[in-house]
Image 1 (tube, one colour):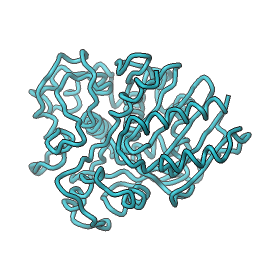
Image 2 (cartoon, helix red, strand yellow; image 1 turned 45 degrees about the horizontal axis):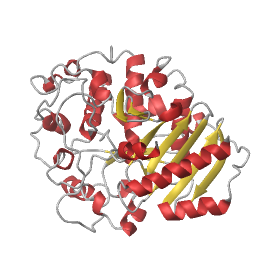
Image 3 (cartoon, helix red, strand yellow; image 1 turned 90 degrees about the vertical axis):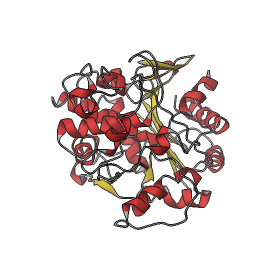
Image 4 (tube, one colour; image 1 turned 180 degrees about the vertical axis):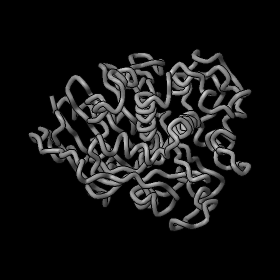
Length: 389
């Protein structure tokens, strides 16, 4: 069964894909945004030394918005009984996978917490597609707040400039489950793929760059009939949330995730050329706060979303691979009722509701996605869960 999960998780990617060539330049905030975007498009071609240096400091390279934490609302993560697993096994796994941080919560208590590669509890690490599950939660909050009336609404109700495109007749739910039927190429190695070209084309003044690109895509199948992983559609979800709420994603995330989840550190969300957050990726968060977000989802969202939202969001609305692997509302679903958020280069949050376990991991893996590396991560996560039980 594990081999099926590999194909599913290998699809979890980022919105920034390599352009031609590479660059060693590292502009500070405020530098020309076109230069910053070009470098962002080359993340997959960074050397290991660049990944180690840059994944925890993306705010030094790219423009973005800060999500402020509220110290008065901090959720404590008390120490629990240490996980009965040899320290040497943890060290060996982290070294072999280039893991910078690993934490295991059970019943909201820390049973294991380890750091490496220069990361500390005070630092942040980039999420890549783990951000998609944060974006999903903002949709749940916007429904609870009345900004989004229903997941059955057409996307064009909230993004009318998609009218006349392949998104005619596509619902918000189909966007959330990546079953729009719109054609998309998510090949990270192809500079001509949709995900590679998305932020590289000139955009007319006053036009949202995500909408500008996505409205040109053709219809491939009828809405709701085919699942295909599309980072561009998560970026569209971000546009939808911003337009429905009238707020930036950073501000809404502070209100609906950071404060109620009791986050300890500020977050950083990278932005496009219009200063709008790239909602399909690019969120930098501390390890403990990734775990707090997982705990927040496990506990049902503390009234931020309607009752049952997370149960619905984290069940399979589309089958990804045989054996119980599927996709929900921007969450991956696994056998045994488990679910998670996944990003390239080894980022992840894995949740086992039955055992009340949350595992968060941040890494600088040597490859964006790789079957063998993913198998090893899955096997070790299973080992951690068995030890916790």
